[in-house]
Image 1: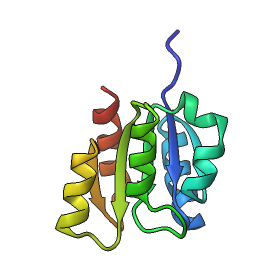
Image 2: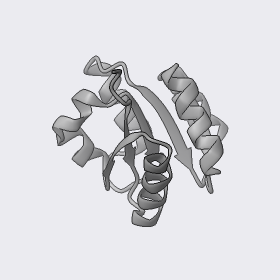
Image 3: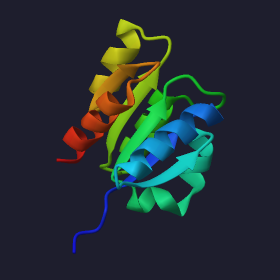
Image 4: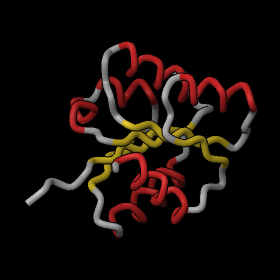
Length: 121
């Protein structure tokens, strides 16, 4: 039996983390949540993560810096960046770093799930 994909959600907003987590759990995905990029990087869960959903603007490392650190370290997980303050520069940088999607908050959960499924396929 194939193992469920593991999704990591990194967002400093607890409400965003828990609502996405609950939606993804209901969809049958395995989910880990983190309140910061630093806590995700320090976690052994990153080794089993198939797709990372991260906020762009967070205290400490932002979502693009997290994406860059993962890429430099050789992690090949799919990355989806979310932000309430999109800019063409951030969108371009996320794409240059290999992001599977760049989404504007508030994110429609069905659309986010669709992007995750596309990134995993």
